[in-house]
Length: 613
Ligand SMILES: CC(C)(CO)[C@@H](O)C(=O)NCCC(=O)O
Ligand code: NA
Image: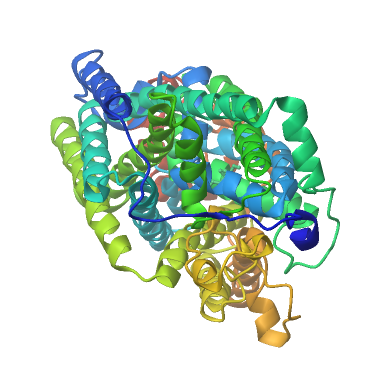
């Protein structure tokens, strides 16, 4: 629908990127970029040398469970605001209008549910890794499968996260590609390995501020240069960029109120509810109240982050209303920034720092959470006699190894073709849904058993990969649409890689049928589809295998787990209340929960006394 409205009355040359005529990046810009790295490094060193000097796994992986809600909330935002989102969302708004903004609606339930369902369960069980829950609730194999799935997801994601911004920056400014990858990867590895979770959280705080500042600066200067707010608004209106609410129920329509506002909730739950990186932040909070507060505080900040990205897209649109930007999707924003800020040295550096802040904060969370699950879920169960000093050293080694692996993944990403690169980014969303599903199966369905959970997880993954890979192979998504409205050439379109947030751009020209229609399902529904697949398959298989456990679980039990702890000595997975006390005691002892709670918690010791049994 934009095609006619946005065509200029007198065709004028579009902004074509000539790779030989890259924009200049001045010394001061390099200095600002270097300052970001130095400051992050400084924070890492500070936490390596202060406090308990990172000598226990409690400190290294969980920040001594002493964090307050403000840093935790900013860190929660930073983790899943990757550089792909920072450069992708404005490009999305620029090409398609403000429909994507409706994802803000999903933040309400997408944060309320984690705050009141997932946080109480994880926090009261006093876990370190979210996957411990899966063993407590189901069995060891379910835990291992969950952990391996998470590792697979995160390792692929971190490669894309560090490579994409470096590539875009290289294309626009000639900034050395591998210099940027190595600098960010190595600095991040260093401060994560030295300073542990405290450093990761506090660098996230600093980097979130840089992110906001960079975006705000670009918006302010952009509005000024376009002729003021009124002029921006007039152009955006003239170009028909303000989208009304689209209530089309078609699930293949990429962005509608339903895909964003409902499908988005499941995406948010998979990120803010059960992802290890976020769960670990909740667990690092001083009290459960602080953890819940931090989740609440994410809401306004995430709305601000979304608004900044969307407004930047609109300003970009106003500026190029009559001279369309024909550059690759991830490069648009950088091109816009460099074009606009050329006469203001330092400001483009600030925006580059903003993009790399987004990348650093995402990969640092990845390194630390990967080290945590590898140690807790894969190594510790086999080495029960490990000393604390040894475990800490090992976790540092793991954080460092994952950091180096990130560089290898960035190189692999470099070798991939466009469609594989697209797939790599989509994998992140594809795998998140099944993991959400398996936690929901455990928490909401008392009669689900371990076999059901395993088969459920498997089928959820198959479903996610089937539709995800299918959409890429058949090219029903990620296809044209993007810049075509602006009369860009076919060559430029075919190069349109890694779209924002891995969105599925539907070609509306042909109405897909049958399997094609399945493959063209909007990316926003992937999490919902695959988590439902896990739950439904899990329930069916549980009924068929028929070994319904004697557990009665309700959400209320979880919310009242504190009372349960007092009554029953120990917290149970989601406060399992079992009709027979003896069965319950047997269950908890065999699952090792009592000893787990006792060894990890001082506060729980007061009412958790193994001798009772
Ligand atoms: C968390 C949301 C949905 C918030 O809008 C978005 O930032 C997102 O999809 N993040 C995950 C993908 C990424 O930024 O890499
Ligand atoms: Na980030």
